Length: 99
Image (cartoon, rainbow, N blue to C red; front, side, top):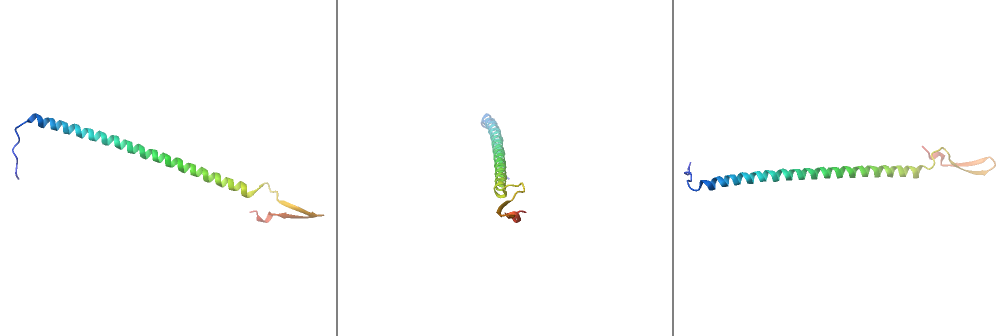
């Protein structure tokens, strides 16, 4: 192995570069931490928006189902439609289609 002799010139400049490197490393760590928090907050906000969207979709599906029930069934009080044919003769419609 080839070892280089220590440089004897400008020791103050060497210590200043070491301090500058340490400061640059600390700044890089702080910037990395700030970016990590920003991206974590972004993920949280996207998750909240997604849960809100899923909740609204669930309410829309529920409202759609309830709207179909009201339109489809008609009166649910047990009364069926009938037509009087005269005398004692009546014809009822729709009674056999109920479940």
